[in-house]
Image 1 (tube, protein in one colour):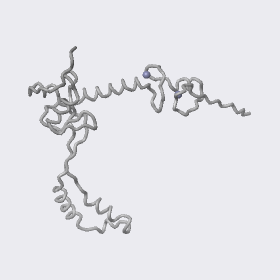
Image 2 (cartoon, helix red, strand yellow; image 1 turned 90 degrees about the vertical axis):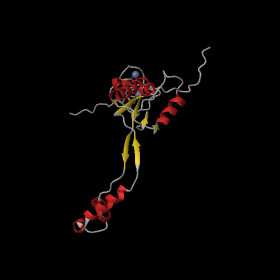
Image 3 (tube, protein in one colour; image 1 turned 90 degrees about the horizontal axis):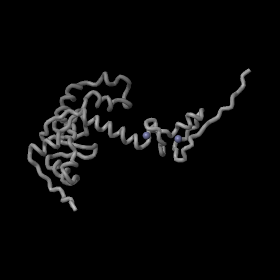
Image 4 (cartoon, protein in one colour; image 1 turned 60 degrees about the horizontal axis):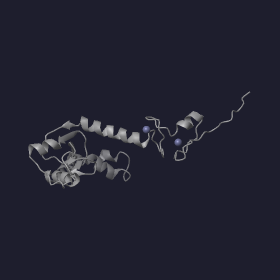
Length: 196
Ligand SMILES: [Zn+2]
Ligand SMILES: [Zn+2]
């Protein structure tokens, strides 16, 4: 005969735990807020299995490996960025960025990423017409549409006149900031740091 077993749910003992889980075994509950890397306690564990210190270390390692893997290319005026926010469009921007944000040559970043340039737009005649036709006409109405090719030629000409250029963060290529400084004998107006 089937005897129902009492089901016990165990809760994490960490008072700052944000997880609302109940665990089936006491071991699982004990490990709820234990960092999977260092074994320390995770404060305010959301979805992470690591403590904030280990997350920061892992994130720095990912960033380093991304930078190490980026291909070094010569700096020829490409748009640069160091984060997803800061785009440096000109060589003057690069100069100002370093001048305004650092106090000595030892502090400046060794490399900067090259942003990806995206220009122009394209429009597909078939899908444009399909969008206009669907929900408004009968099924297979697209079969009765004529002269898609001539519309495509018109769209291509129109798109060519649109002068849009955008830049996106990318981590595939980098330039050497140090080489740029050395090759061009660039000097900065770093604020004098008191040596007293
Ligand atoms: Zn917990
Ligand atoms: Zn940890």
